[in-house]
Every structure is written in C-alpha cells, then in structure tokens.
Image (cartoon, rainbow, N blue to C red; front, side):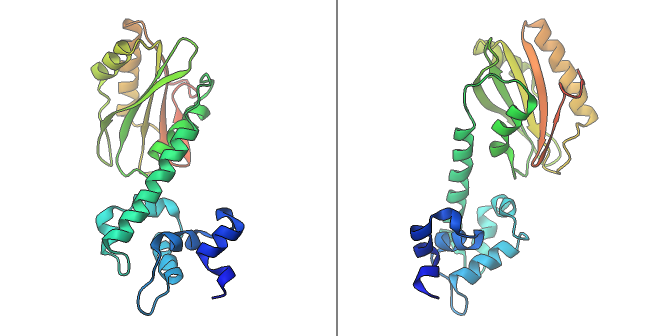
Length: 220
C-alpha cells in the first residue's frame, strides 16, 4: 500500500472524515495477524454486523475478545473508542435550551440509548422555563421490559425541586410503540405528578431510528 493510502498517514494528511469506517477501525486495531492485514481484519469485523457500527457497539467485551485477531487489548481499545464517541454526543446535545417538542428530547437521549440491548428508564427534570436541569437513569431492566418506579420518580423530582418531568425509555426490539403496560404506568405516573404538583410533559419511547411521544400522540 502506498504510504499516502495507509490509514494513519491518510488521516493525518486529509483528516478523519476522509477515511472509511474500515480504515478508522484499522487505526484502532493497529495490527493485523499472519495472513490478514489490519485493513482486512477491520473489514472482517465490520462484515460481522453487515457494516453497521451500531452492531459493533452492541458487542460485549467477551465476544469481541474471542474473535480471531482481536483479543482482549484490541477489544478494550474498540469499546473505549465507542464509549468516548457516545459521551461526546451526549455532551454536545446537552444544551440548556427550553424543551419545545419531542424531537429535542430524542436528540438528547439517542446517544445514551442507541444500541442498548436492555430497557432503561430515564428521567429528565425541568425547571420552570422547561430547561433540562438533570438527566438521570433510574432503572435498568431486561430486553423486554423495565420497571417504572413511580415513587422513585416522584421522590427524585421533588428532592431536586423540579417543576416538570419527561420520562424516557427505550425499546431494544426496534418498535417504539408503547405496550399496554407502558400506557397504564404512564397514566398512573401522570396522576401521581398532578397530585404532587408536578407537570409531566411527556413520555418518549426510543427505538434507535424512531421514537414515540405520548404527548404528541395525545395519549395522556
């Protein structure tokens, strides 16, 4: 390979946006193995998830480390890079603009929930101007469900003197439509918020590329 086309040199000369996904992965992997260059190793790794970076993000450390040519140190490097990217996106989308619609919440929460294999329940606490003051994960469940701990949600909001809340949870299966249990628990939470003088602005279900807003669908 000509020196100008080697991933590391190409990145330094043209910037990271000039590199394909496989080339960026090759820089992280650093070396290939006997009979397989680092670029070939990177492409093989991508092929395991049909070229989807989200699929790689979903892989756990044990699985990555078990792959031929990867091992523990390379798996750790990949996972660290994915986590840094996720944290960067979270940091970038955590501005203090008032929440005006569900798409803002989706943009804020997608970096936290994209590719997660289990359901998680998060709460956004809002001040009187509808600005987000706190983003917190409250409960973690399995692939098919998590607990909406209503007393914990109310307690958290009151302790932090929030004026309003937005509930967010994810559906790893890819369908953002709420289950009957989701609808039932959301309405119970809405009633609890009214009783305690809190405003429940929305409950948003995220399924990677799609989301469902209880408020926009007039479900409560």
